[in-house]
Image (cartoon, rainbow, N blue to C red; front, side, top):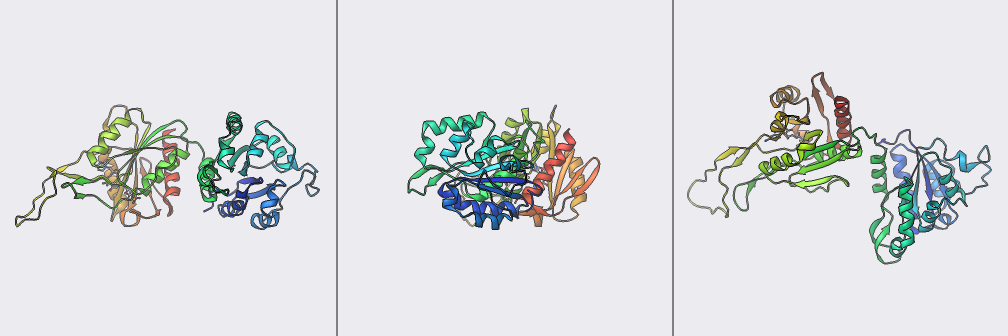
Amino acid sequence: MDELNGKRILLGITGGIAAYKAAELVRLLKKQGADIRVVMTSSAEEFISPVTLQALSDNPVHTSMWDQTISNGMPHIELSRDCNLILIAPATADFIAKISIGRADDLLSTLCLARDCSLIVAPAMNKQMWENPSTQRNIRSLKEDGIDLIGPDSGEQACGEQGLGRMREPDVIVSELLSWFQPKILQGKNVVITAGPTYEAIDAVRGITNASSGKMGYAVAQAAHDAGANVSLISGKTNLIAPPGVRLISAISAQNMMDAVLNEVDHADIFISVAAVADFSVKNPSKHKIKKTEQKLNIEFNETPDILKTVAKRKNAPFCVGFAAESKDVENYARKKRLEKGIPLIAANLVTEALNSDINSLILIDDDGSKTLPPSSKLSQARMLIDHISSLTQ
Ligand code: PMT
């Protein structure tokens, strides 16, 4: 929970009703270890008190260009130095217009103009204001100037209307910032990832599957995307939503997954096989629901294709990473599996702990030996895995 340790963020709050959400945003950013400095416009003070933000941020809140508490008397310079980022949340249409043309008529707009760090804005306004051609023109200008946007979202607005313009929720802003801060160690790489379970039909309504939730594979997709990769995520049936920016391809059976992987893998630099793929499929699945009869039901099985092994054997194969879920003697079995599949890296985990849980502990095994990662969230494990893959593919 301290992914923003050592990061200093200047949070600019402008005058919209979403300003009340800035309090929660400060709390969540602090929880991630960030050092937060708050600067408010005078209209923002109409919506939320600086005292609240001062208490939550543990730092004085600045509102004026003529702030005598800044030692050199130049708050517009002083406050943005040593910052990793200026985040404006909420950013009103008026404030966006101001920074799109480089106006500097209050402390926050002057800080934006005088900054030597990145700037991200989280717009918040009524949908008509958002859709207005002048706002859209201003947004294009911001993007051209290299300013990033978080949101806006669609939904019910404070004025009662429905539409695009709501500020993203504070927890979503924080997770987007966590992504934004990740080092781009896989910039421009094409990464194909499989995730989740496969399903082998027995008849029209029944089938054989497993308890993989897809959480580990989706976390790897998120981490690869955050590291700057172009990610294709080939997934069995899960209840998860693909991380924004990741291309999701659905696959039901092991054969479907194999076909989808072979379609994608030609241009892949890295292939990460997290899916729990069935080793057997039903030989002749019935098109109709099998009726209960006196006769014994016999099901014949075929072996499914080994997707990972097939990809690893290809000429010009991408860097292949396997996963091994074992119920005992994890490292030993995984070592054997790595050699048997002919892959440079395998991530082993204890199936009873890894399956459908939020926490995992991977053992990374490669030519140089093994490294056990301390237990943490699947996203944090995935980030460490991506880091390791990047070091092996440099
Ligand atoms: O989805 P979660 O609930 O988050 O759980 C995550 C997980 C436990 C499923 C995941 O961390 C994991 O360990 N995935 C691998 C599951 C497994 O048992 O793999 P395996 O030992 O059957 O296969 C070894 C490797 O070959 C895997 O990379 C697998 O994707 C691949 N394989 C296996 C069979 C097959 N026919 N084709 C394959 O490509």
